[in-house]
Length: 298
Ligand code: NAD
Image (cartoon, rainbow, N blue to C red; front, top):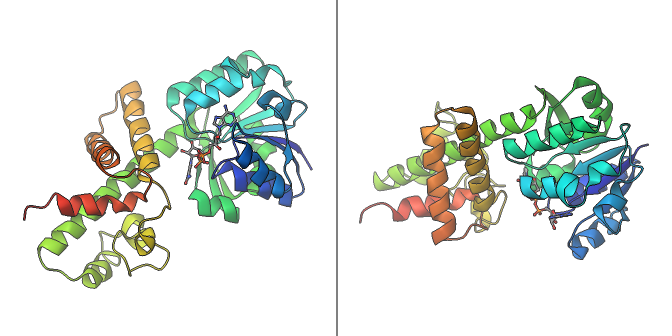
């Protein structure tokens, strides 16, 4: 049993922290929103009164925060969590952040001889609830090995992505491709509709042919094709368009930082930006199909 601090008890962090309790760990949590703390406490998490208080004496500190900005503030610039723990504590940032923020927290941790792992996740809220997330861990091997049983209390797989920041780098590649493939799926549906192809025919052919992808086969933007798809419940997320815009923006920041050229990633980002500005960023990202339809002439 480990003593674990969990910082950020939102849609993902709430259920993740409760899964740690279920696995027998002692978990102390904090969130700036009291209702989020109350929900975690109902699941057996102990409430802390601040981030540093949660972290003190912990064997592991997890952060699951909205963006790199909050991660920098909590670990270094404002709450100085890295200064209340010792070199025996392993810090894991599971938020999805920009590469500059990840580099910054790795550098700050190294200065203090603290092991830090950047380990974003895939699997969404359903995976967080079910304890079936995939962790993409970037950092030194020894702390990742030590953290593995803790990861597996919240997930089904730990991928060793490479050295510091490699977890965030691979996450951004995956989510850029997901955004692009959802745009392509929505575009194919709009073309099929314009050409008079029946939805069921479109789905049956594409989902079993070379165009098949997660966006069509699992998160299908057309209703009545896949039982669990958000399209069947008015595009209730799922994964919001706003979060997809965030991840596509991160991919373009990573491209700028590394000098990579990603024209389709930029195009997908611009489409999701228009969708969030002109429509509703809180719906599932497969609702982009509505904008694609409205872009068609006539
Ligand atoms: P969320 O907004 O529901 O949760 C973030 C929590 O952090 C909130 O409860 C917020 O109050 C809290 N917070 C903000 N500033 C804080 C601070 N200074 N101290 C303590 N708590 C603070 O977001 P989420 O959906 O749980 O996502 C968390 C991270 O995981 C994001 O980086 C997101 O991109 C990533 N992610 C989300 C999903 C998903 O499907 N929701 C999937 C994979 C990855």
